[in-house]
Length: 193
Image (cartoon, rainbow, N blue to C red; front, side, top):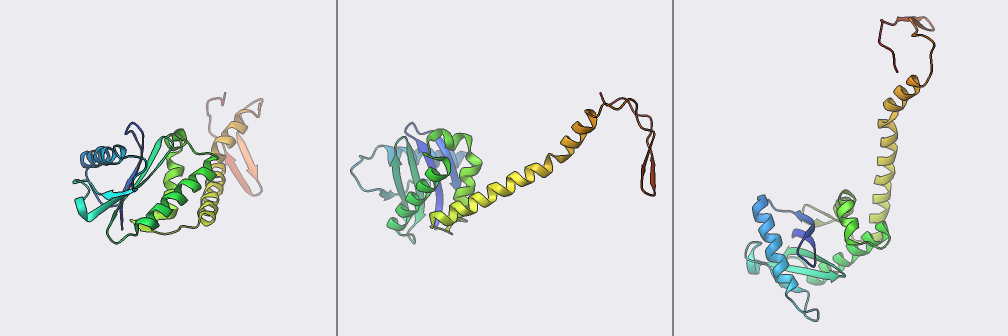
């Protein structure tokens, strides 16, 4: 099971942290610092697996990571997970980010954190891997983006209606509004403008 997913830059600044076990905020920050120190001091030509830090569970857990440009992608997993499977999952995650953001960079993770979390949620939920097919993940993320855009149109309708009424340039305020058999008396209201 995946216990945590961390992304931080070469200076140890966290760009994404997702914990699948409950820790208080101070402990999470200590785990991020400890993980950065364990991963960043390793040479580029060594294995991408190492024992977890003392705060995350010691030798019962493994840190599996990849270093891309200025970012470290680190998955903390228990002994039931395959190291090579998690390395492949990291690769799929990075390639999916790359397709969604067209050459993903650190700033994309900072300014589009909600979208990154949505992509991650399509892949991993509750510490369990849900999907590894990049095309399926992208299709689900695109569907979610379309739904958000259509909901934004609905949510903006009242504001557009008020704006349209304000721009009608009525010579005076109507006192009675008749719609079919319904007659509505409008109270004295201040001007729209």
